[in-house]
Image 1 (tube, one colour):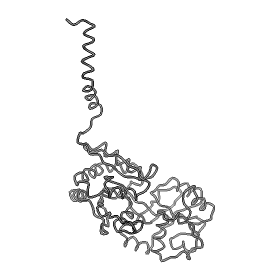
Image 2 (cartoon, helix red, strand yellow; image 1 turned 180 degrees about the vertical axis):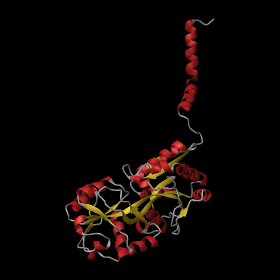
Image 3 (spheres, helix red, strand yellow; image 1 turned 90 degrees about the vertical axis):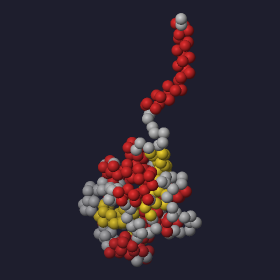
Image 4 (cartoon, helix red, strand yellow; image 1 turned 45 degrees about the vertical axis):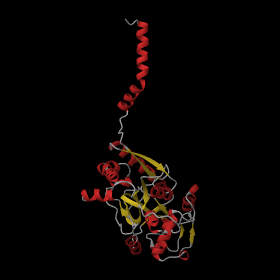
Length: 333
């Protein structure tokens, strides 16, 4: 016969001997997971950037709607870090600007003197446009890109995206610095560029980024600014000739103080991987996002026209991943 004292001792002994097993069953019951789940590392920009916001949105989607994939974002200071980590295998997928991808594979731009091959990189699909926006003062009389000649402009800090974009515009228009009354290269840090614009030191400035942009909206409202149209024959030829550039529109409803839509050009943020990631995994990633396109379109206005589709202009040495080719072929995309 087991006395109460001995019975209590027996229960405690039984419980502690089996505690690890009980805990394991509780964990599995409360937090189910697949033993075969594959961890996906997605490279993005730093917190606060639209790239990071996009990466987190995609990872949440994968984690919620995929049974055998888990996703985690890995931040980097710029796309050069991400594209190099993709090439070396430290990342599985990453958000890469189309022009940077083109330059890396073709050894142009930033990568002209890099002794590294990026030919193992493969695309999945484009995510959103990154327009080049020309912001002008309303009292400057700049109603078109051609009217920019002779004006005072800030082109952004040297080697910045803004500076590179304006250099591209000047080459397309066959302009030189002598065609402007003033060219400044003020950075965005400490609002140096916007202060010069608002005080009238410069009459125009280049802005790179998705729309709508809260800081740009404040500039339009407080500093008598508007967005200039860059739809002309030279830009049309530039876009047609460059595999990484695309024509894009900033719709009339983007900013309350902007009375009409604007046509411009820019690059596209693209989901990229390497040929080391297997086709089945790439197929699953695309499938999850394809089935949840509506969720992504509702995440931000920049995704309002998003649809999963094959990367365009793949004639510049930039190849689509076999898993992406298979998916788009089977879905007629």
